[in-house]
Image 1 (cartoon, rainbow, N blue to C red):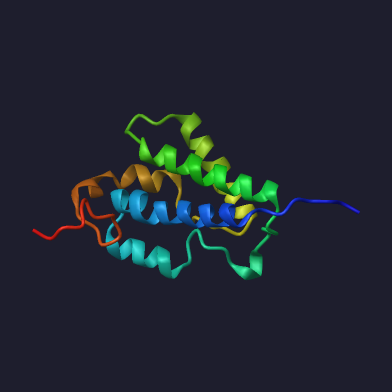
Image 2 (tube, rainbow, N blue to C red):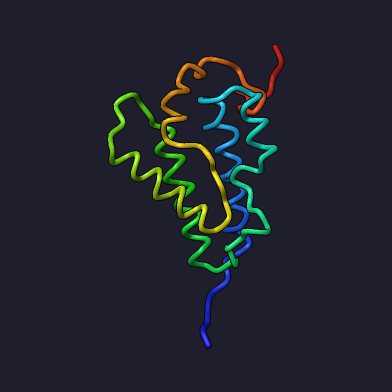
Length: 133
């Protein structure tokens, strides 16, 4: 018999916030709204019940949170001179997420090739302010 600690409701909410950050802050920098719509339809970074390995334990929640944080930090500071270390970090975190049913079918090269998207306004991005001028 094995005793495991369950993740807290706050951790579950934080995982959802990190996924929302990917959709609102990271993806709009690299992809068009149409591409992000397709990713949303494919349920990217949303757990699939048929291949869900995440059981809601504390350890698993921390692994998912740290992987999402690492990907966010890596893609937030991406430049053209990314080395093999960053590629390996990306791949390792993708495999951790995949292990728990959170799929991101994009390679590191997808983000490197999509740098031209940076200046467009996206419906997924957060507004700069709440006032309409």
